[in-house]
Amino acid sequence: MNKEFDRANSSTAPKSVRHLASKLLISLGVLVALSGCASYYGAAKISSVPAGAEVINLKDGTILGVTPTTVWWQDGNSDRQHISLRIKLDGYYDKVAPFWLSMRHQSQGDAMASPQVVDTVLQQRGD
Image (cartoon, rainbow, N blue to C red; front, side, top):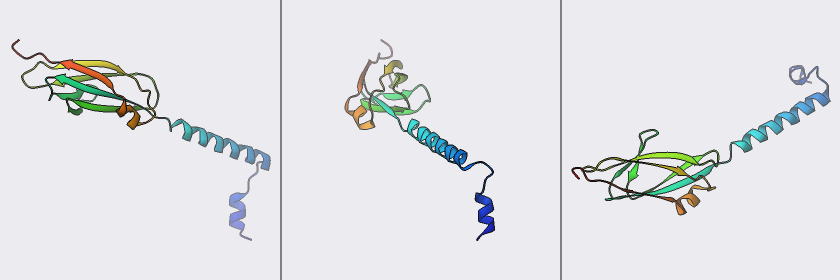
């Protein structure tokens, strides 16, 4: 017999308490794993008149694309998300386009297949 193994695996707690604690830890692990699995998606099809404007996320300053473009977002819950974009094109005034995005889709593909429409009309400088 390996005395080191016996000492490392022995406990002063009764076997039933160790068994209950083991089941509790397993249940807790499953709960944590399942709570982190849910993701919700939303998408917006963003266009501008004229086309060719940069789309900038005001939350973090990232450039999301050039109009027309479709952009998706992912979140851990299905609550609507408030999105604010800046639509920018040389020779035109910048336009801020705030909207509420529905995070109702279970996959990115579903969101991209059914995007919300965000249309903007830019005003030319000097008008």
